[in-house]
Amino acid sequence: MKQYKYRINGSLYNVVINNTTDETAEVEVNGIPYTVEIEKKIKKIVSSPFKKPAQAGSPQPESSTPVIKHTANASANSLKSPLPGIILDINCNVGDTVKKGQKLLILEAMKMENNIIADRDGTIKEIKVRKGDSVLEGSELIVIVG
Image (cartoon, rainbow, N blue to C red; front, side, top):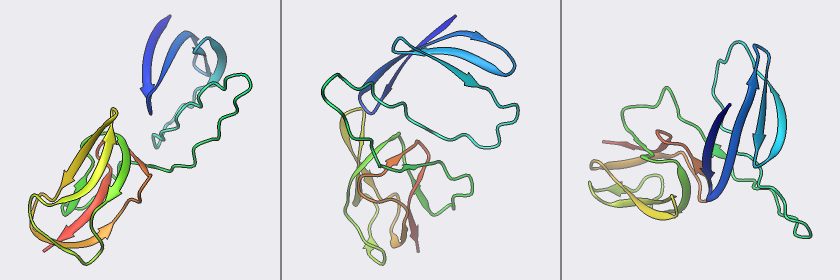
């Protein structure tokens, strides 16, 4: 039996892995038992947050926030996310000329706002995220050229 605690978007999840075979795993998430299938070959890791357990009498809407995943073929001109989090604000547009140290995005991670700044002078070629997007560490955020 292995026990883990995860905090996803501010919600704490207690996960217990009770029994595993080559094909299945018996797990509990916050005391709710699940049997999950284990695939032999995993080609791509996909992040899929657990749903918060609903409290009686208070249905909660599901989040439609897309998760921006790590891009394996990200260019050298890419500004990448230092932490997993949510994009709160975008302070630039495609075509803008930016200076090194200029604030481009605000990323909320671990309930703190983090300024994402330009690491070099250049022009914004592409903005890969939108306000409200969830991103993983290493996700491509902005492409700066020049």
